[in-house]
Image (cartoon, rainbow, N blue to C red; front, top):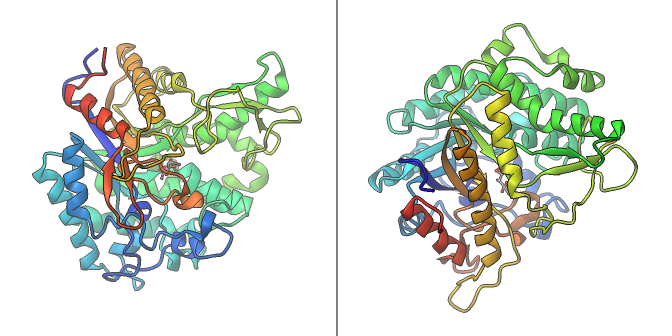
Length: 446
Ligand code: GCO
């Protein structure tokens, strides 16, 4: 099959994971600066201070995108780079994103701009962060600034990346910044992030999207009501808690009941859901793996706030270096579900990819057939979804570059181009070269 005409072949990054230049040109601190500098939070004590040095190597990275035949690039804007600690616009920060966007447009690469990929200004965290409703309004003000600067050139706006992680992992499990383990604050953060999305949507108005990390969730034993209920709860927290308000303007009743002990509903004010559920122009889907859950004792306990009694059980599938099971058909399951259970929107796969234990040769080249296979199998699932009628418009490999993988630091490499973290040389991996041929052909190999 040839992919639809105009299909977007992209790669994605996020500001804190690639930019570096953490204290340059007036950039302020974010929660990730503080978190990563706190001993014991990030593997190896790694921080994003230098990251992949993308801030200084912008032209090199633009050339790399062209070399890889990309016709789209997804990046995020760093909030603490463009708004200073007094709440004023930092012109130098805006300049960087103008150079990036202009460079993309010069090369016929479509920019996909994400406003929030987790780097909340620390000054706002000091006032309660996402547990404080005021943060949503601060986000809207920031969205206005970025839209004023780039709205004439950027046609694809994503408000938030994975609000699940920003709320439940950051404020509940504490494994992401700001590292709080406060289930009630996590519940508040969910609603305030979604409110921030709604407020920003009403400012940007057209070409607006949100990116959600979605998973198929299967009970280990579909005949065991305990497992079925565990799967319902996990699906509720990971998928429906975000999909339903954004696409249908309401929270799922069963999840509201699950979160009742955390006071979730206390944060919802009249008018919020109308804002949050206002129509979008497309939906971004990040896909990595699926969940296979039991409510019976055993398995491993993930950090599922509100679903403490659900455990993940291995299916004995091949796993990536993250320990995530490879489940390519799960991407079809997710897309097919969106098509049948939700109002239909154009969809972009805004992230999909894998970390493996790469070994680079003396030229920096990585021979990574496993990653190539991962992409191919997942792209076959996308192809199948398109054939089934799902309106998928583009695919973004995660990631353009090896980068700062959050709590895992630099130890986990997701790039389609290898980064030497001593010289900052970029070298397309085997999987990157393969991806470039697919992008050029707009088709998978026979
Ligand atoms: C994600 C993040 C990425 C991660 C990737 C691999 O949105 O979770 O967008 O920043 O690096 O998912 O874990």
